[in-house]
Amino acid sequence: MKNIFIKICLFCIVVFVIFFGGNSLIHATSDDKFCTVCHEWMDPMVEAYGQSIHGGANNHGFKASCASCHLPNDSYVKYVFKKKV
Image (cartoon, rainbow, N blue to C red; front, side):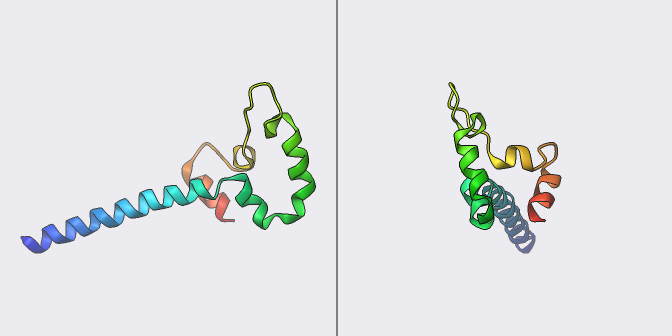
């Protein structure tokens, strides 16, 4: 009985770490600064984006992220697989 309880506890801990760790990783890598680390050739587009209404140059200060337009937002699974590729 004690052995089963330990296995259940370990399983719950692993699931917790995978879920929240994975979610944190997805959030951290969705930042625009992270995108430009690999996409250095996009520097002219990044500069233009920063001066456009999408990049925060608007009356409200709203800023759309790269992931808002370039990654699917309808499904978490699609988002993860598209980001991986």
